[in-house]
Every structure is written in structure tokens, then in C-alpha cells.
Image (cartoon, rainbow, N blue to C red; front, side):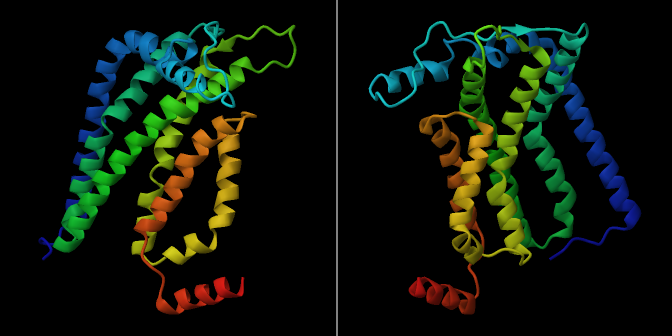
Length: 275
């Protein structure tokens, strides 16, 4: 049973307060993030620049047992970050605080969106959508974690150690480092929303499971290209670290969408038999 229908102005008022609370939460967390950002920068943001980063240490243990894996035990690995613009450190402090606030308030922002859309839903729809928002939030944080602990360190280690000429001294600018750091982490967070987006498209009839079966081979090639673009490394191990989670997301998306109509399933079976 739906609640009493709201007028246009009631919806506009509710949207205004939703935006106000969301912006206020971002502002409060941004201030808190600004105060602790120097510590976070030294211990979290800059951690992948040193050889004692936890991922490198664990990879070193694994690579010592398998000779075909890349060497992660190089104790001399270190990325020098330099600042070449006068105001870059200040603006980096500001923008990093905002992105940290966005990351920390993401569950609250999802809850605000849920509060805004829930009055328009029936009770059975609310149960499904409530689960969807929770699942989407969890997947976003998993994606950001994969970006921080796997994708970004592997990309940084390859690009920072790549040598075109011995005459070139490797120094990474602060702006370049932060652009790649934020992009890869938040892009992975968004990519991990693929099962949620697939489910939503399935609910409105734009996507079904036969699509994933039909284009699986195309998807594998596309995901390999995407993984190679994200981590431009020449070794298959680093490539597989990015490819396997992406392919897992593809299969998980196929699991969450609705099955195709029986007629379409029969056509797919005939095609498989002919092959």
C-alpha cells in the first residue's frame, strides 16, 4: 500500500532538505578529514610509494614460492613525489579532504536517497530496493578497496619502474600522483556497481541473462583490454589480478538479472547445438 500522494511542492521541499542534509554531512566530514589529512597522507595515501607497503610485503612472500611471478622483494623501490606548483599542496589538502568525506558519507548519502524515493514505492518494492541500496554500498567499498590494495599499487609499481632511457630521472608530480590515485580507486568503486546496474536494467526489461551468455566471449576480450589499460604491465600475473575481479563482476551480474524468456532460451540451445 502506498502512502498518501505528495504534491509537486512537497516533493521539491523534501528534495531541498535531502540535499541540505547531504551537503551538511559532506561539509562536516570534510572538515574532520582536513584536520587528519596530514597523518592520512603519510600513512595511507603515500604508503604505496615505499617498498614496505603491506601489499608488496605479501606479494614478496608469494613470489618467493613461485619463480614465474614478478619480483616484489625489491627493498630499494621508492617513488619520489615532488611538488612543482606553488598552491598544489594546499589544494591537494582541500580536495583530498572532500574525497575522503565523500567516501565516508557514501552509506549516509545512499540512505538519504532511499528516504527520498521510498514513499513512491509499494511495500514489496521497498523490500527489494532496500536490499539493493545495501548491496550497492557494500560493493562500492569493496571496489575502492580493490583499487587501493591491488589496482593502484600494481599500476604505480609498473609505471614508476618503467625506464625509457637511463638518462631520465624518475620523479612523479604531486598532481599526477593524486589524479591517478583518486581515479583508479573511485573508478573501481563505480565498476563494482556493475551487478547493481545490471539488476536495475533487468527490472525494467532492458537486460536478461541470455545477453551475458551470448556475449561472454566478447566480454572476456573487452575485460582483458580494460585490465591491460588499467594496469599496463607486461606480465600475466599483474594483468590477471585486475582481470579476475572484473570477470567475477560480469558473472555476478549475470546471476542477478532475470532469465530470458523460454523462446529465447530455446534459440540459444539450438545455436549451441549447431556449434
